[in-house]
Image (tube, rainbow, N blue to C red; front, side, top):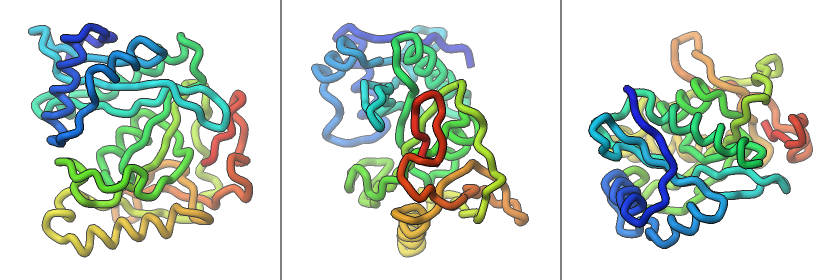
Length: 246
């Protein structure tokens, strides 16, 4: 859908960002407007997406970060109101972030996502073509919000840059399936949902597998295409000065 995306800075605009965060995550510890203001004024990027009626329908919050000594724009949070999802708004906001980051001297845009969430994998790896740089088990701890509940917050940390070449799947060793709907499993079959969480830790932590992209199994299931991890962290290959741990 056609939307207007622009940076935000005023107190009223940042309050709307906070309201969207509260309406999506339903937690009691939303980001203070004072902190959003600091991000906006000192190297970060707070975005709002507006519909044709000038209503804010999505937001994103990003701030400076470092990875292996390189400055990048860390996209910490993005939310689209339920009525406006699956319309390409998230993709448009990521594109805006990337262009802005490169214009302002950052090396790339990075963010985390739940690897068990199938739609997140499709957006980040299938559509945006981001590269998985790291796996962080239970990265944020237990958040007890409407999306994460009391589950461990395993995360992929991914990076995006337009000049990074497509991932090669020639060294693929294994397909690791993605649950069809982890949110439903967490509600209806908690034991199975926890099995998935523990399985991903065994596959991606320490000397486990690295992610080369997405593919369908012979049975048609969406999977991560995986290869062996580099023997030395950060030594997989060098892309314009960044060690990509893929």
